Length: 351
Image 1 (cartoon, rainbow, N blue to C red):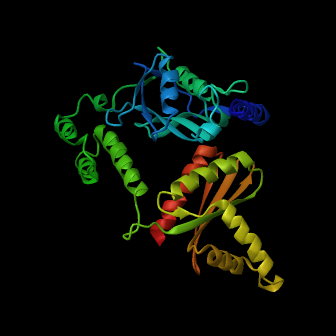
Image 2: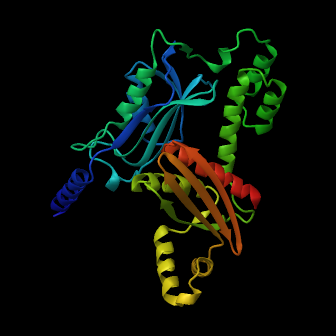
C-alpha cells in the first residue's frame, strides 16, 4: 500500500512538471564589451543549495569561482534567487522550481552591470520539462570572455600598480575584519585607492548582514503586511510576483509578515462590514489593520507606459502615510527590484 501511495505521489509530481512547463529565462547584454585575462569570477550570493550547481556549471566552462567575499575580482557574478527546498517541491533528479532567478555580471571598477540572466520556473535536472537557467548563466560568462577583449579581469588588489604600499599594508590588516568602522576609515583615508572598491564591497556586506538581524529591544519584530501590487499598464503577472516575493524577503528581515491569505480574508470581511458610504480607502485600511492587529502596511504601485515605469512605495503606520516615488527608463525586473529596495530604505529613514 505504501509503495502504491508513493507511486501516486511521484505520478502527480511528474504531471505537475509537464503542466507547469520549464524555465522562462532571458539573457540580456547591457554593455557591448569583451573581457580578457584569466577566467576567474567572484560569486556574490546568499547561501543556498543551488549555489553548488551554479559553481559546477560555471567551472565546466573553464572558470575559477571565488566564494569567500574576501578576495575579489573586478567582475563579480551576483545571484538573487528564491525556490522551495522541501522534497515535495523538488524535482526527482535534484532540480528546483524557481520563483525568480537573476544572475548579473557587475564591473566593480566602472560600477555598472554588464550582462544578466533573468527567469523563473524549473531548472536543469527537472525532466522532462527541465530548463537551462544554470547553463544560460555559464554561457553568459563564456560569451563575455575573449582573448582580444578590451577590459582586463584581475584581482581588485592588483588594479593600481603604481600606488604606495600604505593602503596595501592597512588592507591586509583589516580585510578579514567584521568591523564596519575599519572599512569606513579605510575609504576615508584612501579614497582614490582601487582597494577602496573592495572595502566598500565588504562594508555593504556587513551592513546587509546587520540589517537582516535587526529586531526590537524586547526580541520581537514588529508586524507588517504587504498589499498586493497595484499596476496600470502592461506589467506581467510573472514580473509582479518576482518583485513581490523579493520585497517580501527583504521585509522579513525587519518584520513579522502577515500571510497574504490572511490579508485577503480581512479585506473581504472589511468590505462586508462597511456601508457603501463608509468604504473609503483610508477607512478600509484602518479596519484591515485593526482586524490583523498590524501597524505597518506597505503598498507597491507600478505605472508602465511603453518601456518607462513609475514605482511608488507607500507605508501606512496607523494614521500616518509615507510615500516615495521614482521613475525608471527601460528597466528590467532586477532594476525594478533594486528600485523598490531603495524606496523602502528611504521610507524607513523618514520614520
